Image (cartoon, rainbow, N blue to C red; front, side, top):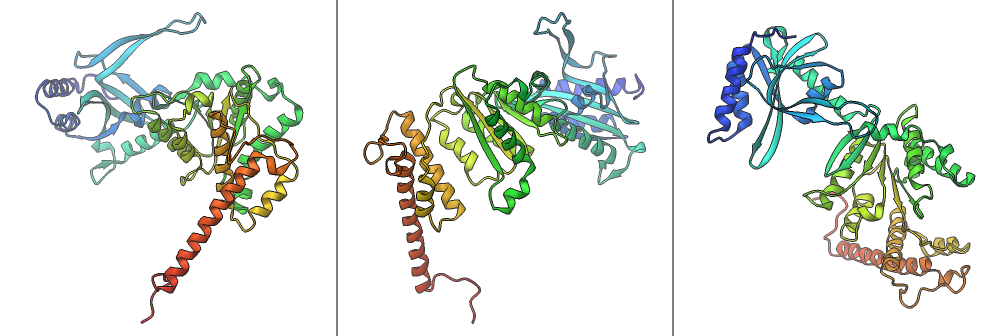
Length: 430
């Protein structure tokens, strides 16, 4: 570790610079801190990095050593107590929440100094970390410390990897939750009371999704999947999700779980939904869980949510699980319906088939939610085996008509453009 007391005077000077700057008219606190550190520690490189890099958390996890320097009074920290929230009998912990201070830091066989500063700039709270490495013991390229870059890379990778944890989204923020991970470790498919055939089908469906990426690619099908668990409270939805999370985390190639707890936050649900799917795409292949889907996805954001689920963005490798207590509607699928759909959609590409089905199901669901049971007349089914009276068939037929009309219109536009010489398939020959 860095020798105690060697830089006490410099630490005090940096603190004075910070205090003087923060109490006066200022332009950039971050720039002022970096300038102070470079002037007070001339033989050291100073690397400025946001706290999300996880330098101190990296040490807290045991991957490095970080000792908060309290040998002088030149620091600012809240002294806080973290009580135990359960009845285990364990004692809480009293610790420092550092607003400005220095840490003696050791990673592998290398010594660093790390300053942490929390400040408000342009109305936004910022927390930055400043890593100092001794130039004489380092490799410096273009003014950058190789040793510091290696530390940042190691800490950043650690911060995005899960270590017996589950990603939880709440208050517009993703955080790792080890307690949630522990809570699912005792859950297995043996605990799920479900018809054996249905249970096997569910397990095979999930296992097949993560094991058969090449099959999806071979048939040109997007490698994404969605399953909804529905039914009255207590019918096994939650225990099924827990068993699923446990199973996926126990694979030889563990699949991470992302759990959405709430969309609440100052930026609104649209922002939250965007953040959720951005993280899922970065983490894929992964399991994305929306428990109590009805309370999360309201009518106000439903279209935006569906666009993230099935829009232009690449959701390869994402399996979505949603649970709801209120989904009690089903759509009959009589034996003759498959043949009828195949005939009416003949010549459709996979994209057109997908568009027809998704739009039709959304129309039906919207009708059920609003208490509307008609589309060009009543949608009552007089005979479950009668294709013509089936809501899916009647809705799908209408969507197919619309899509074929769009195809024909597009074809006419291309023909007219070609005749008028405004459409070219390659470079002009002159």
